Image 1 (cartoon, rainbow, N blue to C red):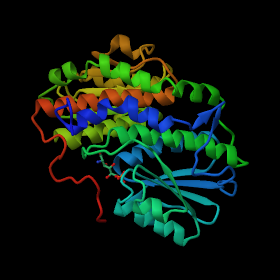
Image 2 (cartoon, helix red, strand yellow):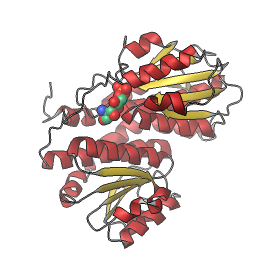
Image 3 (cartoon, helix red, strand yellow):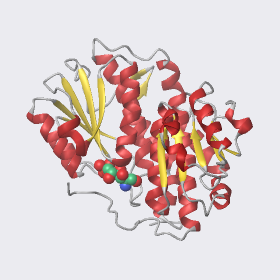
Image 4 (cartoon, rainbow, N blue to C red):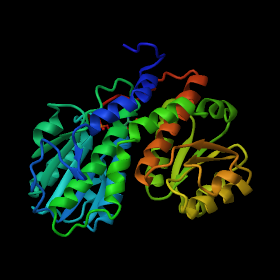
Length: 359
Ligand code: M6R
């Protein structure tokens, strides 16, 4: 049941310190990532990676895509429904990773089947043991988030992003051409603090006050660069999904290539950044501010945007990869509180289903 919470979504947001601890448990030791279900050497013949996913799972996959490209491995992140036309060459050296919470999304299953038909190696990253994706793929890796009831994906997103980040380091160890991240030690060490940091965000968030303040806006914009870009897309998806308000996410630099035309004093802009050096997000947020948009800085305190922003949703200082996930927790809370204030059907938004089993 929902216990002390009004909605499953609220409960699931608040369970992230625990679900993330489960996701991490036993998978990082002495700076090495290991997964019970994946023998060392599983990926030694991989020379390219394609992630296929839909919706929130696609946003989690973007995270891993950025990390693998940084490791020097050719990587694509492809919307599963576009696989037929968007995928480049696929052969036995291609690892196709299906990222799907339910393991039952038709578009994602279809993409994996197509890839397997071309000889690709396949891996399902899923929450559901025994799901179709887990059964059909060559290997399965579980995100261990626990059952998610709310249609809006929350705790499964954070567990996917963590599992996929660990997978990138595991891949870099197997694949001869890939170089593990230079700051890998820091990345893995700071992961241990993530559940505690999520707890801090949940305890101290000012998201409810902000959601109330910005009620009655015409549009809600979310921008970010790098990891912040995927978080911005996810923030906008969650917001529109449960509030029914118009929300859009962009790469920070894209704002001036069109969307800026929609910016007014009735379009608050959430600027997501994961470290102090993200100038693109700062410059573009300030551009929106000069057209009257209230701007909300979402990220660690040590960023120049914090001083000029109209509001700040703060996240603890940590590695940029984890800072993005913490920023996302703030945005989950913004969406949740906005939807509650608007009296929306939080756990079952109109027109949507938890798992989309049609193409
Ligand atoms: O079960 P999956 O991860 O394959 O689902 C993919 C999307 O349908 C899903 O993430 C959807 O976007 C979420 N409900 C959004 O909150």
